[in-house]
Amino acid sequence: MYFDGESFNFYRSWTGFCIYKAYVERTEDGFLIQKVTVNRKEDQYAETNDRRDELLVEILISQALGRDASILWE
Image 1: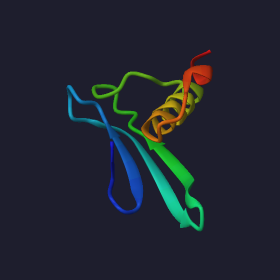
Image 2: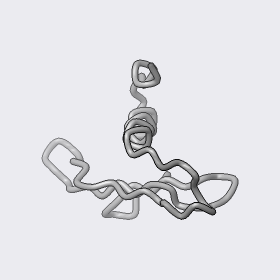
Image 3: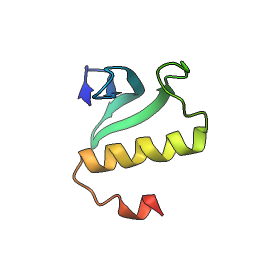
Image 4: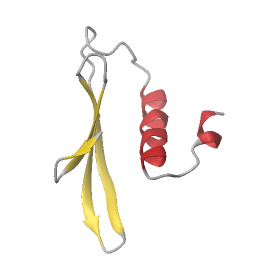
């Protein structure tokens, strides 16, 4: 994951494909996610369930911030 100034970008380490882009707006308290895009190219990412992707992005961001995301796996 890296931040390019406007979005957090999540790449698959073994393929190099960008899977998620979380576009953010800076606020007084940090950042507010405005939109998340998901790579739906079948040859790069096979998941098609939006809810699963939503949860996975939440887990990835929580873990990157050092928060306990274990409850989200249930």
